[in-house]
Amino acid sequence: MKTLLCRIFQLGMKLGYYLIPVRTPELITGEGCVQTLAQPLLDRGATHPLVVTDSGLSQLGLPDGMVESLRAAGLSVTVYDGVQPNPTDEDVEDGLQLYRDAGCDGIIAFGGGSPMDCAKAIGARVVRPKRTIAKMQGLFGVLHRLPPFFAVPTTAGTGSETTLAAVITDSATHHKASINDPSLIPHVAVLDPALTIGLPPAVTAATGMDALCHAVEAYTNHTYCTKLENRMAKEAVRLIHEYLPRAYANGSDREARQQMQRAAFCAGRAFTRGCVGNVHAAGHTLSALYGVAHGQAMATLLPMVLRMYGSKVHRRLAELAQECGFRGTDAEKAETFIQWIEAMNAHMGLPAGFSMIRDEDIPQMCQWAQAEANPVYPVPVVWGKEQFRKLFEMARKNS
Ligand SMILES: NC(=O)c1ccc[n+]([C@@H]2O[C@H](COP(=O)([O-])OP(=O)(O)OC[C@H]3O[C@@H](n4cnc5c(N)ncnc54)[C@H](O)[C@@H]3O)[C@@H](O)[C@H]2O)c1
Ligand SMILES: [Fe+2]
Image (tube, rainbow, N blue to C red; front, side, top):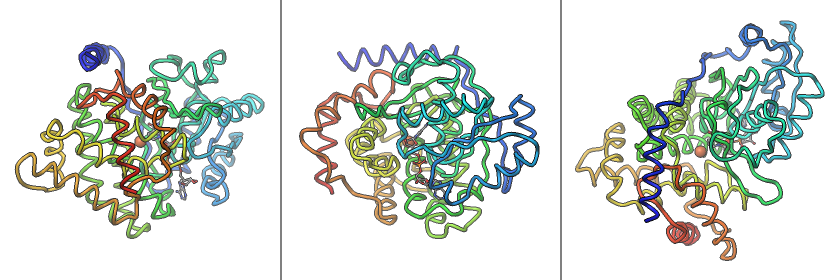
């Protein structure tokens, strides 16, 4: 019955999607392009952007070249670098205060998914001042045009530079949930591979596997995907298979960095319509309660969830496996694909499980996970609390 209700809802969503424009941001790409943003900002009427980033990136001086180039062109720039990993509503309010106090008129999100999502939520609060983050979470809680919004990713993973999502944790309840709204798709995505050269191997690994998870979940969900999303997901898988091992082995491999940035963008574009699935629904609870890095949670849970789906995903996984050059029957290709994910995780030192999962937390985790997934994500197999419990217990056992 639960599955039937979810499927009916998803059919309605599929039809509704034909009425909702899913924009692709304008792209500015190439090494050094981050220093060319002054004119595009002015063209959109922004003379005083708020740069939203985190303290680690500030200390590395990574935003400095961009900020100097903007100031040299006569723009005022205010920097907010208080975003924490897994950003909270408090981070958003602090950034919003600065935006208002400084009289900003645009936003540049600079960093990984954490600063990009926090920046989107700041933008949402600017245009919906009476709505709290909690009220905006879920579907279509913003529906107002954001101020000029540029996204500059410095990791190659979340794809937030092209997605409609901003994932924010409630600082009081620790509940991590997504605002999903087409208004949150950035106006401009700036892909400068030079920014990812210094990304440490562990972050390269986790964020790269997050991108893989986006492509795999969007593709195996398939209900909302058009040809474009299918193509984007396949391209992302092919690029990750070829270039993630290279980017991990040698961070200075510029071709690998550039292609991973493209892969993250494609995977983000794929799931902006195709949606993520049970891996994300379950993984968000691990980040919210135990601070597990998002990509680590995704990498570890992805093969477990795919195995639990069984034959329901063999055909779609086989199509992705084909992109990696794997051969055999659909079932064989799907199994080889899952084994490849496990081997990548082991090779890159990503965890096989999570020992910190506590029995007393599992009911809450199952509740959050199934509420995130159902009915919106068109997952290959609709899970209730029992399946999520099995997954969390397996993840603890594997640690
Ligand atoms: N909006 C979306 O569509 C979407 C999709 C997936 C995940 N997310 C969210 O994104 C967040 C995770 O983002 P993330 O995985 O990019 O990590 P992150 O933004 O939390 O960054 C992780 C760490 O890497 C550091 N870092 C980033 N770029 C660096 C660089 N170039 N050199 C050196 N260090 C660098 C940061 O300072 C930080 O310490 C989570 O909150 C997750 O829920 C959002
Ligand atoms: Fe993700």
